[in-house]
View 1 (cartoon, rainbow, N blue to C red):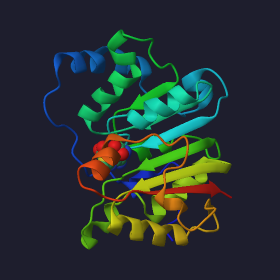
View 2: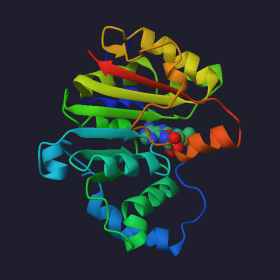
View 3: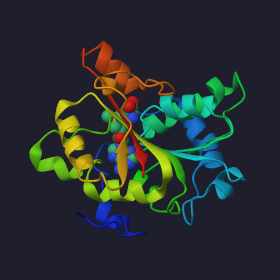
Length: 238
Ligand SMILES: C[S@@+](CC[C@H](N)C(=O)[O-])C[C@H]1O[C@@H](n2cnc3c(N)ncnc32)[C@H](O)[C@@H]1O
């Protein structure tokens, strides 16, 4: 198994996707220019609840939040908790800012969200070990070709880092609609049973959405447009 080296994300590079899509509309650009600097994760130094939220609250981290629906929904559900999301795709960041902003000022902004425009593992490496309560990896890029399997976020190096950052009893949530990724992920997690316990009460658990797990845009499309099944996994850090 690849050893997790604290503070050494270079061995954990998983930044392969696209960084930018269509040009941003004026309103989106305004959010990136004005709101993002106010709620951005500091570029350097430790990433702690005290530093980001001013108190020792439960900390949640979402890897690759896409359009930010899940991040904003969860933060709205749990106002006393701090949420950090990382996403390298600028159009996704702009979309998430819209959710956080309370529909562009129509409602008060969601106060307990911080966003990093970039690589999740870089930020994760700066979170002190054993301090995360929840970690979310929802519909990671599948990289379906076998020769690209090392690019998948779910691999031994990142999973060791997930284990290091979660507190004992903390929860790692993983969702996918991709059968190749599912098989790969289950094989990886099978190598980490010393760190994670699969929270599963009955055989079909992973086929139905657990409570407190808002749907993402990607998931809705997978289900409604492509007719895919979606699989949900919850693991407790031992
Ligand atoms: C298939 S999309 C799913 C997005 C979202 N989780 C959802 O369910 O709607 C995968 C996302 O992971 C992001 N991603 C890829 N590599 C990443 C990395 N190293 N750090 C953070 N996000 C990453 C991509 O930019 C993309 O938005």
